[in-house]
Length: 424
Image 1: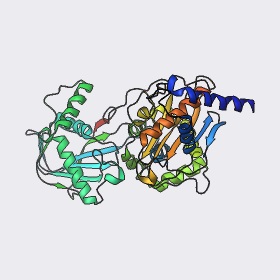
Image 2: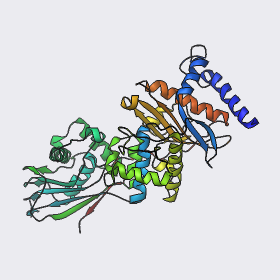
Image 3: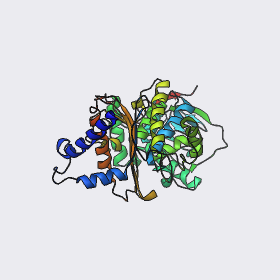
Image 4: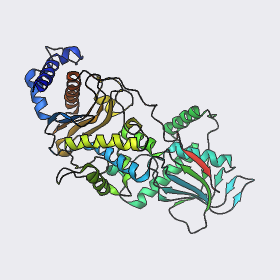
């Protein structure tokens, strides 16, 4: 009882001094009143536990709410369990017809076969073009064949994807052509190439170039001669790229199992009770449900699953104050490196929601696993992000403050550890 009383008193004291001591945009006199702070706290849902599982704060902890992009943590863990940390996606490059090596021409088609790489970008195709140039290929006269599960660039989640499969493949074919031939590059692609060449120590001129004449098709009955294999970054790198930027195209990773498969996996591993968990999407778009207590359990599971695969949590999730993206923007006053976690934001679905969940390193009484959510934000995301940050800072201050944590390596690019192998 005395410990709880001291804890509550600490929260009240810190809440009263927070505007002055922690640099709120307003002064203490102009800042939120005690009444408005109390109303904010009453609106929020939260649940926090010590690293060993002792509950230290809970308000609406068992109330189902929309976790938005926090769902990406579940999608990442399911993929890590299903595929393993060493997994790389393969994209095959082949040709049909005769190869005139003297002219550097393929008389048939260039065949790109996708196998589900979720992070296949223009720079990855530039790697392929450069490798083909090194083999002596400069021109393909028989057109382009794109087939399989091929995604090039971003589509912005399920809502941005072309519903017609044929239209989508035509779009992917156009993106392939646009990346292979510098004459088709816009300013963005040229900047991508120049940055990529600098990173790799390559001469920027001339850039790699494959000229493809002829039409784009989606199947071929001609024999395909394998030429190259492109292997993606390892799975943890891909996951980190998706979670740091909260990229909704993470649904590509879950396509073999779908949102239903992620939900089943999560239900088993979290021992969720009926009504506590439902997933409509694997990205957090749409209508999904978790409770704050289950989100904390999810973050605890993320720590253990990462460790089981020889990874740190920061190898797959963003770190506040270190990585770019929403988590750092949501917690600008939290000590850099102190929180590893995930944000979630919806503007209109379910009346809007803002969520922050993560593992916080504590300097005094130790670290915390927490979830704080503002349902019904009605588009006022910044206001509720500020309230959530106040809640977290107050909780940490009452326990001795946050601890510095190491920043991970700089976020890799899609080609950073990608490989090109010649077909045998």
